Length: 146
Image (cartoon, rainbow, N blue to C red; front, top):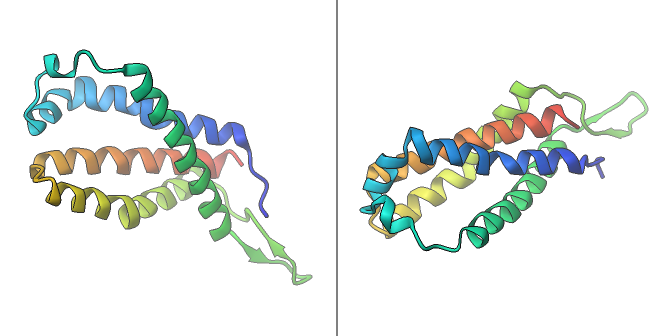
């Protein structure tokens, strides 16, 4: 079993909340709301603590399993025939792992949900872009900070 740095998992789990505040705020906030048919007033009165707390908790779950997948793909066999984990760590390599995981698992789910929920192409693309960016940054953090 590979060693797990739990601090890196928590730091990586913060990425979607931090990036989301920027991405769904000043960068794509108006476009995202309009793609949903909402206004800023429609977002008022929600339980923000529950929403952001749940999002952070779920990001910790995603971060943990992303770390496990990255570590399990970094295995090699040394001269003595022993299994060696974590043989290659860079931010770019981890970002590639994160982006590939997102493109293979998350993006198809977002698209399927969007199609069944009659989401606009604009909404689907905004959400896909967000998660690819988040997974790439999370993967970079998790791979670099072993």
